[in-house]
Length: 342
Image (cartoon, rainbow, N blue to C red; front, side):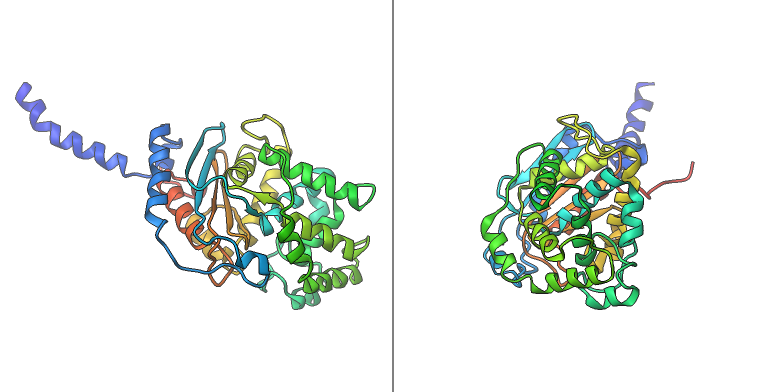
């Protein structure tokens, strides 16, 4: 009997090792903490030396951000935090802000407010395209490209511009779980070079998608893009979406759970600029990037993850961010579309 057990041991060991290499989504749950931390650490080590991409330079202040900044944070839906690298350095949130302004409008006015104003379709055009507005008079785009994002900003409730801005900043801060503020150098640099965004806003106003002052909406939008965040902030914001709209550490509800599917759907179809389809094809994760170097992704019900690494690819997405998140999600089974036969 003892001899038979010894003979079977190599087979059992081989099966065990095979299971360790299997994505954990197949079991429907995340692994133990040490395993998750090991996956995050490995992704950091594997991509730390990567030198592909370059900082955004069309906004002068972004070109001066340290390209070696690299941090990863994963926050589970039940509030466990795993990190590697530089998680404290702040960068500007940039276009990642669009997700949370869209969420605020949906929470205040319902999902039809977004659907009926700027729409939810991927435009197939650059994020700051004038042609995309002209094609359908501003009605067939989404809140994650600049014209739709500025229109969404104009839809935030508030007695005046100051109140609108206060509502936006407070909302972002509650998502992150700490008080956020604007990086003044980024704001000044963007405000001096945002003539195209002013034009987009004027055109959206002309077609009836911005009711108030389009230049004021552009200025508030510029401020929201200049909010400073670190990797932990972004991961907590993503984890709040993964947790049905409730911040997993503070317990505060930011978005009704029933609105989360609409928000994630727009992220999935339009979150990574012109490469959103490629990203979704490879990872299945709703995500949003920003030209400040941030990238967030959401595995619904499991985790939110963020990377900050400023060098971008030609589409405007963090090179290290995409590699690290794809590796971590693959190892932890984060793809919500991944299933196996019963």
